[in-house]
Image 1 (cartoon, rainbow, N blue to C red):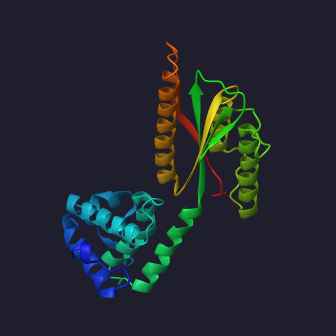
Image 2: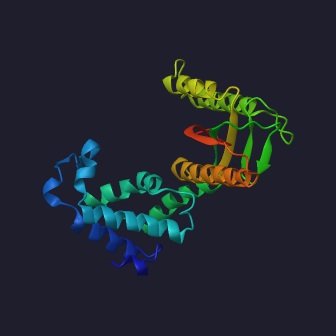
Length: 249
């Protein structure tokens, strides 16, 4: 089916899309069935021909465009959520349009999902925290006049919130390697000038936005400073970053 004419709510259109995907999948690489279920696991990527992968990605993008979510949801997130429908279709389970739409609605949470990314800016010192749209810049330990919190305190409070959330839902781990890694990343920020950038979306989209925002902001600073003809002035952006989600996972 030509995706230009695709209507998300039409059962017939969904059926045509999934039938086309089935025809594009490389049959010789489809592994057998066990207890009525196709064995995917680690071999799932081998089921797709290049044509099938392209068509599947175009289908996911079409869904995001219809729902106006392409600025908030990555293809990876959409794939993780919707791939089970294709897997079930391949073993003979029909797609129900209503169930498909209900699942897609889960993606709307990313429109309000706040992500904060922190960048080290070398060779630049500020006397306070400055705010420009979704960007703040200042020393890691400086307090923001609007929130009365430093970046350090904000990150610490957010970590406490995430820890409490995990304890409440039973996912807390006493010796969490990932958490220890975050603490080591935070240590790098001490005494440094930091860019804090806020963006909405899933972690992949938000990170892409923040990297672009950081690079654009630093380039603007460099340009403005160059107008002062201060020879030898230099600002560097450290793209190594630590990501914090404003909402507990």
